[in-house]
Length: 428
Image 1: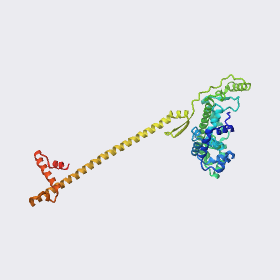
Image 2: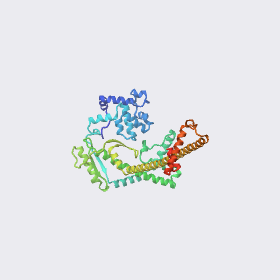
Image 3: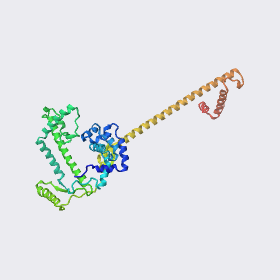
Image 4: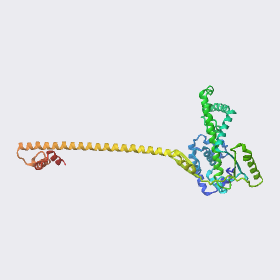
């Protein structure tokens, strides 16, 4: 519908801008050193696309996103880290043209004011056959039943058997995200398909079959909703002259198909072919309130690249429940830390009390020893008779201490103090 191909003139316009030359050179230098010389010489451009894709085939999505951040950080900020298809496409554009995808888009927007490019054909309109959601869900369920009646299971069994034989020979893992296995039906019936033939008709086989049918109905209803979202988001939520008008046809009641769907659609097409404005009004365009904005929710471990999706997420019940859980866990952790601190504080106070008591006991024992020495010295002095104080072997300190004790004893008799009180005074 839109002319979204990368034109050579867009690439040349980007390369001619001086501010982009330095960026392209730096991006080239930041590329992985494992790139071969042939690729650096430009031979990579002439390779078939499938062969170029094989360069990144063995790399995981996280590595691809990191490489895109190096060569084109602007485009990487608008691309979800898990969108492998877009990551591969952006890296391929850089390898082939030597120019970041974001710069090419910028050049295209300068040429065409609309963000989606010019329409490929000038007289384009969209006929959207709609119905009420409940009716659409019922129709998708019936569609699944019809597909099964027409041999869907046998088709899946045949293909699964052939594919598994080839996969076993090549020693490859089963991947439901690539190729035809992305189609609705394979992963939904996986448990049933891998059962041995004799177990498919057992009670367990019947239960797995019914589970596969229900899963396929759910997946089909979800796919229908994604289609509706795509139409609204792509065709009705942007303003610009390069968006085709969308005409709605109501198919809720198929008994009125002719007057509500067929005839209006034919009339609109005839008016376009005749260059006449159709009488039926197209669906109104809604103001585009979304935009590229990179956000990462650490609590839920999710990444968002659009502002609207981010706002919806932070208001969702699941996100708020997760925050409450984290806050509770945080408070519980704080309570544990507080209890630990209180326990350590009590242990510290107990240790200090024990140390104080032990120190006091040591000091008491020291004073008792000094007093015993003093008494012994006093007895020796009396036996030896008067002597010069300077000639005493016990030393000046002991004599002075004895005199102090004697003085304190005389004072304590007047004050009525005990010997232990005097001893404490002498100590301190």
